[in-house]
Image (cartoon, rainbow, N blue to C red; front, side):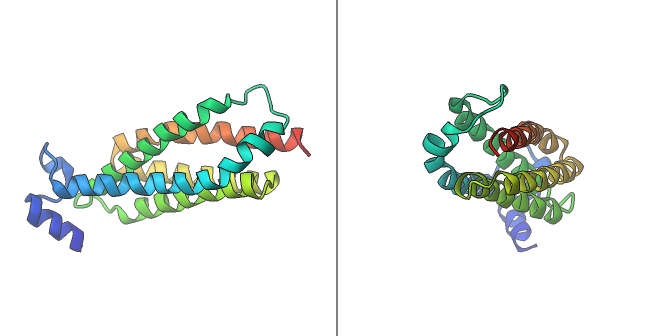
Length: 179
């Protein structure tokens, strides 16, 4: 409520759809959204970095395992898409209730970072599999909630859930190949 009142007083509107231009608070909200998404990425990266060149490299991998070089660029694009999607949802705060979709977004970001910790730091493939299934469910719920507020935001989540689907299958196969 307070942020909406500030936005309206500064921009003369409360949603992105009111006008085509962006005001300062829109840019600030976009930056906050990007920082939040890439903050989660950084937390996950801290868990991942040490194990990539050692433990993970030595695992037996399935045929569909993406090359190591693909993970960084793919995740960068996915985190950017997620951040923009969340910002689009936030920008509709006067048109649609956005607290619940953004809360689910935050939960799935936390689960995303937690998976990296369980998988790469704890090296517990079975618990990581359970966790990534919970993550996938939260992404699906978030995507549906985002779609209900902004169809573009919902569409922007599809590459993410697709990649996590592959990661889930990969997690499962790694567990089976490396008992």
